[in-house]
Picture (tube, rainbow, N blue to C red):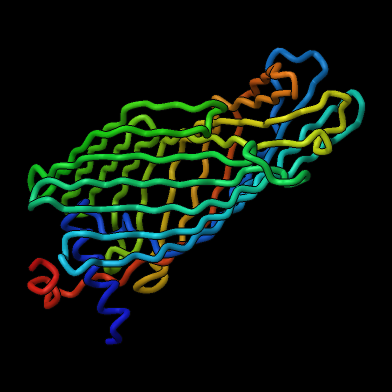
Amino acid sequence: MTQSIKLLSSISLVLLCLVSRAQDLKLAGIEYLSYPKVKFKDDASGKQAAFNEAGAFISFPKLLQDKKTILVNGIQYGMVQTSIYNDALSSKNEMTFHKVSYSFTYIRRFNEKWTFIGRLSPTLASDFEDKLSWHDFILQGNVMITKKFNENVVGGAGLIYTMRFGKPLLFPSIQYQYKKDSHALNIYLPIFVNYTYQTGSENKVGLGFRAAVNGANFNASSKSFSSDTEMDRFNYARANIGPFVNYQLTKTLLIEASGGLSTMRMYQFEDVAGSKHKYDSESGGFFNIGIVLLPPRPKKQLAPEAQE
């Protein structure tokens, strides 16, 4: 076993002690999401909207010498393509936005029960049609304190700071993780609820159900819009609900597919004068597929060294 594999296995084991899930640490991944077109609500012109997303990330974890602290540096890229259809005019308006972010995560175990997790992520989010400015920059982050109640339950509370929903928001968060045998429940309110049942040979298959809210906020140029209105910012949000299935391709590669209902879909455009133009669309389906690289599972013989 190479030194890098030993290090990743040690990090997996320490993370298992810290937050009860070695799979919480993902080393790299790519994903694609599709949202077919649906009608805008309360719009007599019959406008419809659809969008596609694609993204990739890579993380670089480092276990410090105290064997109680993990630092994770990460780079993420995301692309959103929005299409607005107007059947009455037989027109289609497409806009493409990009986001590039760096993230720093600090995980510190105080003792066998208590752990601190903090994450900061400065992001450039724009159509990149004009020169970069502070309008392209957003900052996001979260902090959390967790407690291990027993071998099956971890709970925590913290704060989330985000600009994903159109304006700076600071709100409390609550986490609850339960794992026993083949069942795992991970709740991170108000962001997601995730249940997984592991089955198949060597538990390589995961079947589950997920409900999650998400959004994105981009600086926009008037060049992105086929309109006389000079647009300055684009924001959208949605809530996805549905089943998923994943499969462990190798010891470190996991592929996952999900689908279901996308609801609470909101589009908001802000012009240079600060006026906001908000549109709600009907609920519709969605499809998501991705593949992630996980750390190798820790071996038992590493436990004494990792827990020193």
